[in-house]
Length: 474
Image 1 (spheres, rainbow, N blue to C red):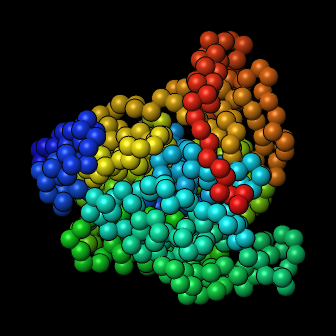
Image 2: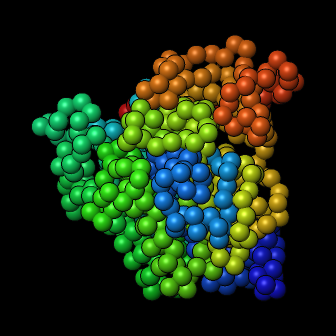
Image 3: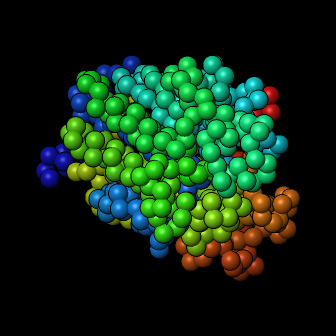
């Protein structure tokens, strides 16, 4: 225990020196004080369309998730952790860049995500987590769904990843002409209905991808990377295709869950997490690896029983009500993270600054970052470094969170629910999310000063922020 305390203190001192110096040369000198083996590995496991209420450890009564439940018991369960967007493409861009999607152009008010006919993708000018960590001496791998551009210049190997295995966009795209029409292909799916390519680096190795085995194969690729002999620390970004519709699971999990097909898919996802954590234990990496499990956005409610649940939260995917952006999140780092539940605010964008601190890596200094270092919480200091959140839908600032308060300026229903059109909240609506997480009771009339603070913050942000041209509309 004493050694762990000393190691934490050393990391904190080095991190503060790096941040204060702000110079790459000084950072490299400081790195030499701490052996590379002392720097942690990082694993990010990113589910697709998993709702806040879809795991046992977050309250689901019939989906069995023993591996994630164990991860939560051994690690840190975050009850107020957010994605930066309520849909796929912008949320992934934000995680990997530490920036709001409107800063990189990875959002749109017209086309919410990238499609197989899209010409754009994550700009080369953006600095990703993988690029930052590779520059600091890490080996890097991306496994799973990318959805940040399918053309060669946008693929993971062009954005700091040494290797890639996965599909370049959502698993419901590239529907073939002779597939059943309407929702039949979604609710009774077959892999051959969707001509989605499976890629290794920049080469297509299977088309259509066999989606019935894809969760298992992602886990196998991740484990190979973890177990590969190497002296360097590593960063693994594992972005699952599931439980996005159409739902697929391997034969071993057919009929596995009381929740039906959706439950089968989540329970196989849970199994895969267990396999990866066990691989970390077996390879003796566990005590030097920070694993983060979270989701890209809330559940796709219009998919009925094929979609998930936001639990007690309001709405789901596609909306900036909390059901669309608050995610079930667990962090695990045996011997470093003390088992606990935190109610501190966090965002997927914060992984950039947090990983930079632990890795003694150099954050980009030539651009605005929206990333905050969460290590004080992870290290058990019980601080709350993040006090604010901005809720964007495309280029529209929809709401602001200030501590426990959330103020809505605009609102729109999730995909397939009302209201379909963007509507102004005149006057703005106010909710206390720690007392009313379901956002049922508008208390704006009782707290006009809080509303005004949020308006001031929004006006300052909008007046000083430049939006990039949309890559999704090219």
